[in-house]
Amino acid sequence: MTHPTSQLITALDVSTRKEAEELVEKIDDRGVFYKIGYQLIYGDDGLGLAKSLKAAGKKIFCDVKLLDIPNTVEKGVAGLAEIGADFVTIHAEPHCMAAAKRAVEGSTTKLLGVTVMTSLDDKDLEASGYAYGVRDLVERRAKQAAGEGIDGVVCSALEIELIKQASGGKLLAVTPGIRPAGSANDDQKRILTPTQAIETGANHLVVGRPIYRAEDPYSAAGAVNNEINDANSRIISIRPADANDAEKLNDIEGDAAQLFSHLGNKFASIDLAPMSASFYADAISQNQMIWIAEILGEPVGFLRAKPVDNLLYCAEVSVARGHQSKGLGQQLISHFVDYAKSNEFAGVSGITFETVPWNAPYYLKLGFELLSNQHIGAELSKIASSDKENALRRADKRVVFGKLF
Image (tube, rainbow, N blue to C red; front, top):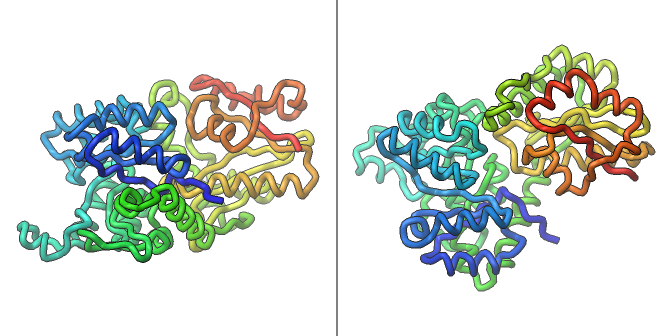
């Protein structure tokens, strides 16, 4: 069975909106995230298509690669953020990134800096008058992007490790030039297979021609989804936290909490800072259950839980921003639910924001339900009415979710 993942971004590199809509229809439920680029935005109704896909619940990557004076970049990015673009590309030049960053304040739009086009190599850069080779220019622009607070970069799979090192792991790596085994390279000079890219640390893979030129785009998209999921399963592991993990848990929570800063408005007025390393050390010593998700041995996410009434209560789930969209949260939650079942809890529960996309809507999509008062015991009721919850409620309604066995 194929599980579609937002790590796969399908490039709608066709000439007309009609062709793009036909392709999306063929890909059906195996497509979650779509890239709309120059061909559709400038040649046909690409922005109208973006709005339509957003209304259908899809994620949209507007690949516009903006580079202009700051005022023009800021207005252009603001317009794309207004239609709900999930990703927008800009050239990773400091003035351009700073302007775009101003434009997305208060929105959920993420900015991707273009480092070096994957069709270029060292000779191409030299011919264009650059003093840097591909690797040096990618490293320079990655450091600048991290310094400007940009969410990620578009880079070749061959530069992923360099990007992660140069940015201290802060940047998402969105990788074009992906070719499943047996596919033609076309005009891409720096390519890897989906498995190689995921194992190297890519967060999202942009795949175009191997899907839209396939005789059966539905099967082609399914095969890439399966390859991504299989690769993730080999590099992700979950283990219990120990006393040596307290500092890392604090770092992960601090990084993940920055997502709320994009929401602006009332979220800017509440304290979403991480607990502290000592808090997590105390939680571990008190035998609270904390499971850590690791990628190739590096902790990148965790879930903290404790018994409340006759339920296992999820106190928090955090995944570092540079490793989101890899299904880590879902794997941690599945582990949490399986533990509750095997240890004879009556069910699981948690408290979350009602409208934040990665909170209540996410849990409901995973099969959880909102719990009625009759299923909320004395201990859970006390947590729901605590000073901490009342403070969080100033930003958005808090709801109790769960699953009864």
